[in-house]
Image 1 (cartoon, rainbow, N blue to C red):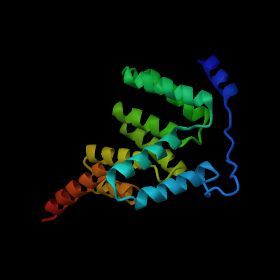
Image 2: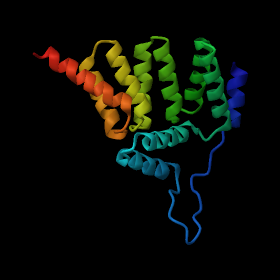
Image 3: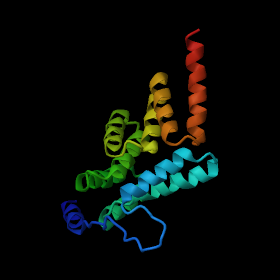
Length: 191
């Protein structure tokens, strides 16, 4: 295991932050952050559900880019282990990811999702917190938080989390449905 960590640490690479713009071209975001800012603005403004889903998928694609071929490979291995229901192996891989690249929000989010699958809600919430510190607009992490709140009977906190999702991704049908259902449940409880 130490050899794997050493090899992974040695292979970490950095992706160039800016893309050159040619004269006469329409201005495009130059950095990953600028691209994400534009995509999030488009996501918030889009009123077509399918178009919004395409934008959300582009955001997820950007989130998945760690900037390191080694980290990306470990993330693939962890996903394979999850698909094979080898959660302990997947957790080992994701522990490596967050250790080697602690500023990679998607590593924390994937580990939060795995902890959720393993019913380790406290650990999942800690990883969700770390994800949201790195990427406050992470609608996937907020959705995970909402699901944990629902599973543990905290409907008001679940409603709050789903509403936060809708502020970022207004056309997410699941969030719309959950907000409607939880609002109705909570209104019925107060009568």
